[in-house]
Length: 364
Image 1 (tube, rainbow, N blue to C red):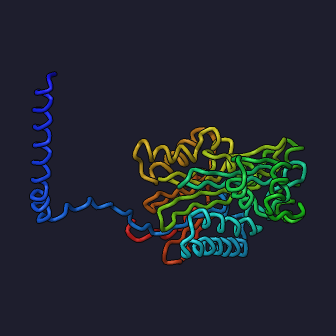
Image 2 (cartoon, one colour):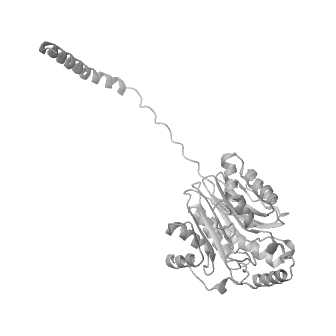
Image 3 (spheres, rainbow, N blue to C red):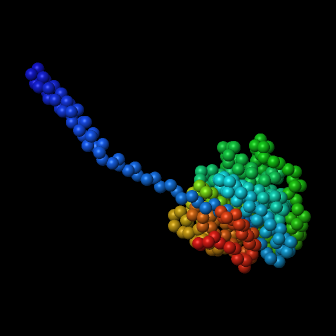
């Protein structure tokens, strides 16, 4: 390139730059007169109406409950609902509501969880529990513990204070001590009713007879809760003493994430029934999967698994299922299931038997 050509190119570039600068103020002035472009609106999720749904176990038989038994069960269910509702009304997450409700049920001796748990073949109480936070996907579970007053509290400690999901037996209790979870003497869990159930089951077993009562024959008895908070977060929890006369450290579905307990952003489930069948069906996750992938409603998914799949395989029981839209279902295929729900108005609704109507939220 000659020197002359370089000088001409330099003059042209400078002229273009000066022209651009001269034109800029005019362009800016023109733009200044125009209204600013509206920013795209960010849709805020509508505030959810808090809901808490609980169960105290399927397999309830009218013939096996006195009037006082029924009264006590209803009172305990209502107390659990109010405890969970208090957490929701205070703006706390669904996880707190589930934990609060289950603690009340674990402390009530008429349910097979915590105090009032059934006895193993060796005359011990072995407790299982699980808790899952649908918003984060975190979960905690314990199995085969003997001295933890409230297993659901330990399950939450496993979730929040350890790197693990499930702890069992002596190791779980060692962790409980480190985490400051209340431990009690094993005798705390004993009730005469459960002890007599074991004695009857042992005699029937020794004589080769089938178990006479449904609760022992079909391994019922569990408590659980599912909740939706004002931020739209879901959570689920379950706690149980397992089955009367169980052996060899048997663990059912309750503490197994996806089998008896599960929660995600769309769905929360707590099951109650013959655990082996819930484990094989991965029942809790299956219900949520049908909602997520098949587009089924809460009721369709819940009834499909609990009322059809589980019985077809030879099992029975029930579940409570809650969706992110506040819709819930409480299917069970036995004579009764301790169950209840409470909404934003703080009015508890409970029922025990299949032929007993349970009020539903307005608009359903």
